[in-house]
Image (cartoon, rainbow, N blue to C red; front, side, top):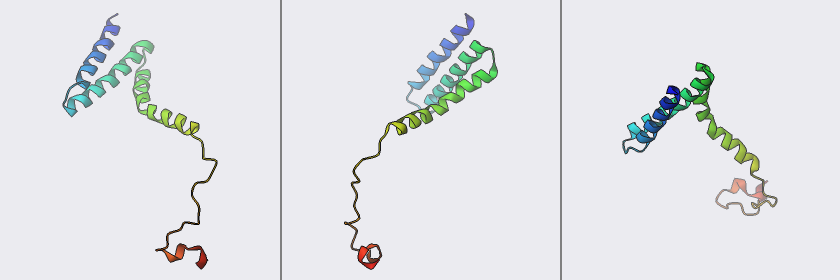
Amino acid sequence: MKELYTVIAFIIFGFALRSCKTIVLRKLGALVMLTASGLCFYYLFESVLAGILAMATWFFLPWIELLTRIRNQRMPLIKSSSSDHLPTSMPFLMRDNM
């Protein structure tokens, strides 16, 4: 039961620091939240490696969002750009010179 209270105390302390106006205290709050997640997994699995992996997963969450968002995007069926409207200020790009 002591472990549960320790993790809850870390989470509350982290939220309190994250609500401060000073940037240094907010960053310290993020570090405390990382520590709280590491402690949670350390107490659950009784392994330091589990705690370190729990803290490391927070850094990989943006990659998961990027991978799932890119797969859902579709390419347009109709090509909107055409080669008929080339700039005239660059003669080496004009079609007549090819």
